[in-house]
Length: 422
DNA sequence: TCTGGGGTCCTAGGACCC
DNA sequence: TCTGGGGTCCTAGGACCC
Image (cartoon, rainbow, N blue to C red; front, top):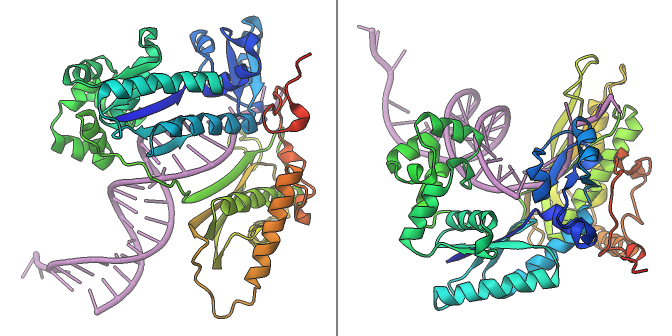
């Protein structure tokens, strides 16, 4: 049996941990630059607020309905997430974090379904008491069915946050009650297609001929079909080592147009990427750098900078990665016209372990010195918080021109921002 | 004025090899 | 009229997830 732990309205719940007066009230969380609504509490969903709505379109509505608004506070969410995951992982040796607010447990270590159910109930209590973020647990023979179980667990309060699909009868009943668009792995495009063929529930889909499914929806659709029919077909990696690392941002207002500013922002992205890479003990062989103007504006000319460069020797060195990023900006920069860049980013790919790195015969870099330098810089920055030590090109960057009007405090990660109790 | 950010996997088609 | 058979690698783009 698989257990899926899914935090309820995660970002909104995190904000409520430190603002309990908001429990039972509508809460929304905004994207970077306070652009769109990216998370909602149950009450906000009931008000009909849609995911991805630009803030400016609903500002009055939010005020009128007394909705609490927050800029996204990823430091807080990330920290509460790791607390939830650490408690969850105690309940099985085989634990796989799937996203910031979801994790799977392989429950085959328990003798019976009764025992699993009992453990799940305890687990939920421990997380609620220990972190304060409400979670729902779904248990079933496959991951797709466990996802489905957790949906039922959220929908019907009678389950007390723990829902198990353990018999054939329950499986069929669950499939029948589940609209096809609610199935994990069925997105917008497949949904339209399935509707055309008269498939409206998970049961309709599971009853289809597998060869037809394979032809229409390729292997991914076929795997979903297998899972709904109780056969495990989707694996989660034991060590979720990233295959690519991306840091990108939109710039608020008009965007930025000076070359130094774009370079400063891109340097910052490159530096964060390099840090992430070192944190997972990896090196990369490719870097992609991009910057582009607003895709919503038709009144000014648009421009795209985009290039991918290889490293001769796989690296995780901040200076080397920034240098490569700068060379892209400098070669593709067009000085003639003042373009306003609205978004830029850096992607590192072809990632592998830093344990074994193929060398280059003509490489003159002192890799050991580089390694030690990065290690020291990481340690200082960890201790000092943020970017105590930076590469000079990063200095012009004004926090990526990020707008965060409604940010809450870093209650759990910054001593200066601890919760004050009178 | 204002429109998020970070990922994965799969497929088709082109270019190339013998 | 007719024009092999078997591969690999790379890339762009689609579809999906949170």
